[in-house]
Length: 268
Image 1 (cartoon, one colour):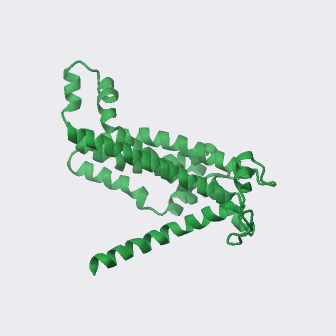
Image 2 (cartoon, rainbow, N blue to C red):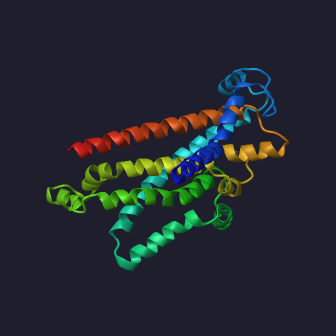
Image 3 (tube, one colour):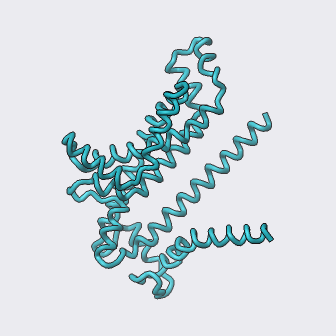
């Protein structure tokens, strides 16, 4: 009976999580402006999205471009900074290591609205012009701790003597880092990059407070503004569907590659 109830619970949870996504995907194949009103099968929304012909809503493509650009730049810098920070934290000892790890966890627990307001006030105090620069710096700030948490487990799994062995064999510190440690840490770095990219892609509160008044829109702020006007642009439905499929494919590829690597290591 417990197994049956556990399976029912899991399936109910999966339905609650994925039913809205399936619902949006289904209604992305109709031209109705109101979600839930089926007006016959059509792929015109996909054509409008891909060709940019969206009846005056071309700003959606601009928002998508801004979102991807900010997410890629923020994820790249977060991966670099987070990896370096993780190596530094790993080499600390005792209370200092616990204290820095605790400080690294605070931005992830802290509510986004507090982070957004704090960064907004900081940028105003430092007289940093709000726009791309402020948004990217803000995203790097809250994405880096996630990369640190992704890389630290790989450092714990790595042979602690491998770095010093490379130095004993004649490698310089930089060569030992890039040719010995980075390949060992690459799975954690890739996971951290994807997590940082996803967090940046999804963020609203921090972006809203740090984008300024120059009209910079990401996908989240565009949807917020669009919803306040009394409705959502129909082309958002195929866009959400394509993003979900892309992330799903990436996760499948990453998991398959990880399984193959684990099998090869087990065979060796």
